[in-house]
Length: 264
Image: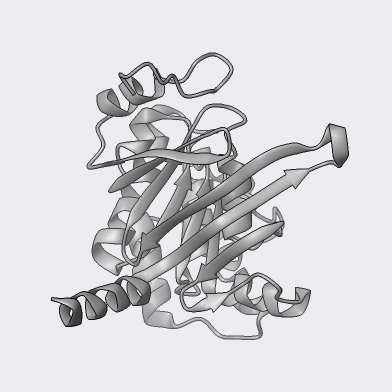
């Protein structure tokens, strides 16, 4: 029995794309300090689409920024694959973000003077690398932008711009893509297209995605939802539906605290 348990534990370690271990983060000092993360621990296995939800002020955006190496933790550990990013110097952290992490934000962050194709391949250009033509074609085809590659952002709809941002996040074949409210600026139809594409990335490309969202419909596209409150993981849900996610979110009071009356 014990010999079987060890390989299982090792497999869990090997397959985690992202890991947080007792992550703590505060802003300010002394009496004015605000605790954003109070000891968060959870794993995202490779090939999983994980949504992070919680009321305003729960720490979800701070968590994503710490996991992605955009912000440094006060204590605890963050791992991308088998690499701990805590203690990395700025040069090493920049290289890791460039090569192993993709980003999709609510603001598309496209360069207005570049074409869609140039925006997609920008991370490779910055790294001095040429795109893999076959992979670039596959990504562009998946996002349905084949006839828009020569267009600049101003010539694209919001949904098309966000699909360019998604393709840019994938072009380096990252270990994990972090998406922060990726449909926040889109109408329901364009948002559904982007969410559907992210789901396809997991199903067809084996991509790992961590998405912060406040939208139960967006969260329902994920394989799993992790709920935060007061800077802690308080629950998670597999195979979410919009109705179940909404019901769970109703268990937070107006101040964002989890209601613990026995029904939570």
